[in-house]
Length: 199
Image 1 (cartoon, rainbow, N blue to C red):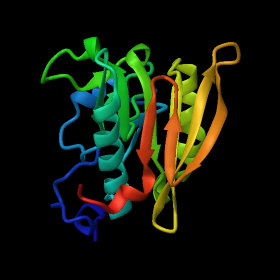
Image 2: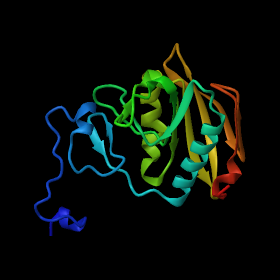
Image 3: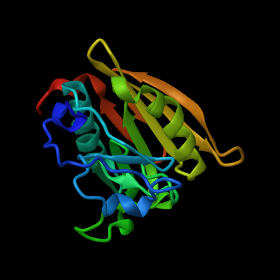
């Protein structure tokens, strides 16, 4: 039995084979039949597991709350890639970016210099990437703020980091349970216990 058949694909399906040196950030828009939310990390394609209910609800909460509070010169979007360099194009769960960086409906990525906050909601299969790999890459790309969201008994806990421009690394600024309240890069106040509420 072939691996393709194990995943409901016919025997003629060919898995993408990387070129020598790995894929590039521009390849991500050209490769056919990639699953949704495929990322590029160090020239390798990363396929993500299906989202959990918690993951989806946290993204919705943060997307809606940030959109309601963001200043006019910034905007919020979910699940869009950031082209960090030629071999890295991760897809944060939520992005806060400069509104002027929106180039239209066909846009597929943002530049790191346009991103103010990158948010990752940690899943079982993304723990190492979200806790170690992506923060290093976002910091090296100059993204000023990184938020990592973990689950604790069904509620989100938000770990907030700010970029130290001298070391190009993130400094922890706080761990937020129940309520996320920060003043930078703009005032934010989010009731984290509302993660399961519809309104």
